[in-house]
Length: 71
Image (cartoon, rainbow, N blue to C red):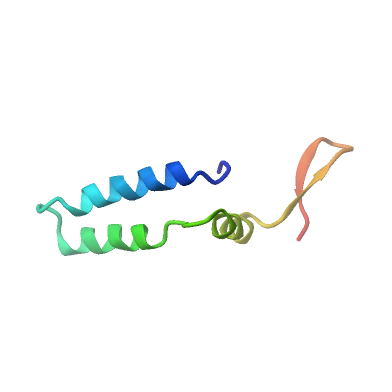
């Protein structure tokens, strides 16, 4: 995962909205994409909170030159 990008999140939202406009989608497909659209991170703080929740908080270890989980 890279750093938060408002531009990229906006592009993702537009792409999902395009999918949702497709009249050939089933209700299940639209429900899935609507859920994904509703759950896009809308701020850098929210994005970072999700990253930490998913991967854990990490701290740089200078002796081995790697990120290590702190939890």
